[in-house]
Image 1 (tube, helix red, strand yellow):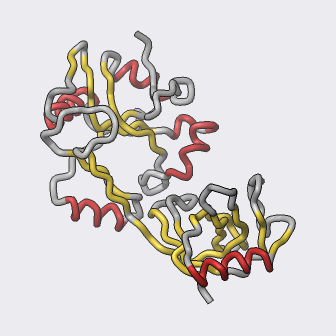
Image 2 (cartoon, rainbow, N blue to C red):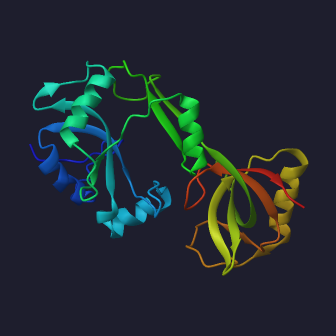
Image 3 (cartoon, one colour):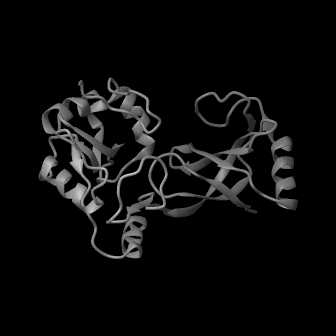
Length: 250
């Protein structure tokens, strides 16, 4: 059977992940491994914002971080405990080698709070933990726990999107030494007077084109960058993720 890389939704992305698939032929030709594709920044942190571009243009930047093994040399390991499966996976992948795009995700010994505090402290998006005794089950499981690191920042509104029946988004920019830089979108979940103030400002300060260089967005309403907001978002580099406007600023 040929080595194949599937996404979480079951799509065959082997051609997009070709360096990783080639490495799998050498490291684990007879195994089914669970893990995640990442791109690392200059400090070794996963950079979600850079991932899409790397998939399209720089596939050799991709790293597959392996955290579980389901099958190995014809043996079904899904009923084994997680600690046992990970021991087999560790033996399979071996010591850290910066020259291979397949890496083992090491175990952290300590409390969940200690790990979360450490992850948030270095601007990671959060942590995922599993019960050490758990058996492998496909789909979402209570034995997997994802805890996210959030941050807040101040941004300028440069546009808004609101299709009937869908959530409303604000398009946000951050100020830099080179001028405005697109930061990403955030849900508009304001209530009462603040919600009215937001949409009144969008109507009052409308413009035909965006106030900064950015990709076209169908249906966006562009505004002068005069409305400042505070948004909560996941920690991490790149564009804002899981962002929500918390309040309007003076």
